[in-house]
Length: 128
Image (tube, one colour):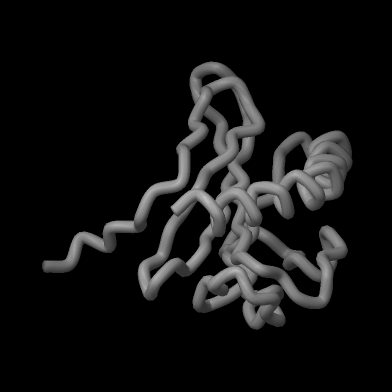
């Protein structure tokens, strides 16, 4: 089942430089990274989909995706960012969501000192 993940990983490599540059710019201006909620309420299945959640803000942010970084009009996956400030310093996570065969999958890429990367894994919502 590597195919949908390989395709999304290639897309992420295209988007990553733009998101990283904006995070660095924001950090230099504010002394912290920004955190943004998922771009889509339901993760796309690899088919381009218009993000429907770009301006849903965490309580400690004043600007959403639209104000911070320019994304394509449609994305094949949902994106989210989380910031952290741990014992080793500040960093941030790019979290990618994808629906495959009706199940939601997630990958985490860490841009910081703590090594919080996670390979693609099916999301377990904890419900039985």
